[in-house]
Length: 285
Image 1 (tube, rainbow, N blue to C red):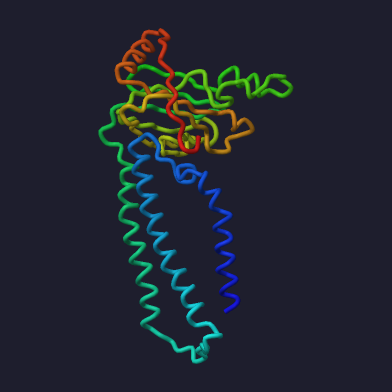
Image 2: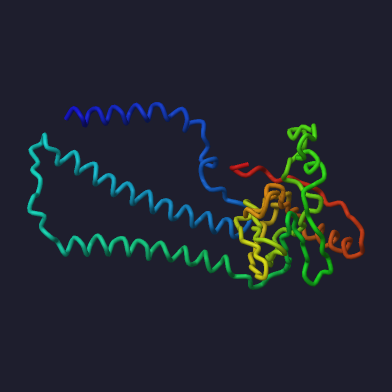
């Protein structure tokens, strides 16, 4: 009985110590961010569904375990069962129940996976090619293509013995000379490949990441919600070489009218100015 009291006291002490920490920590800082695209919301919804299923299972299993330890402890006169009787019914139950749970979980997971691969009704297609260490963007059918690499200021600052202060550079190592420009509320299909080694195109707030592999074309799609214009940053998520950390991705989401103006100017060789509106920071920054 003394052991039980000590355990309860320890649990209460840990709760008291942890309370100030959890009081200052926002749920959004600990949980998976929602993102700004249709798919990111679908993925977040699946994440939360499975999470609460796991919480319920954990509460049930550990609750049962704790109750068993307390109710059938030696000090209460409990005696161990030394007969080790085999129970076919018990084996069937503890096999069937997890299978049923997994099948139920598989239904929303399969629905989300199908949505991720559904590139029908695409409104804009962009071919993205990874190079060491830059990206090439080709707006298919629009006669617009360009390279996008680390901006000059960050590139100069990162050099050994440059003498420059990285903290003085805005968006150090996360800015490029030519960002990818896409319209809001538009289904964009991205065709991914690479020229040399395996890269990975990843913008966290879009909720999607996929490898760009030489000789292979992978595809993903995203649709940024209306009203979510701004600049979204990502990086290559594969170890593609010694300068892997200097291969950022910047996507500038603009209104459909601004995109049409930008696209027309690109096709005529002009360089229009597109407003750089930084979105509100995501829960993870």
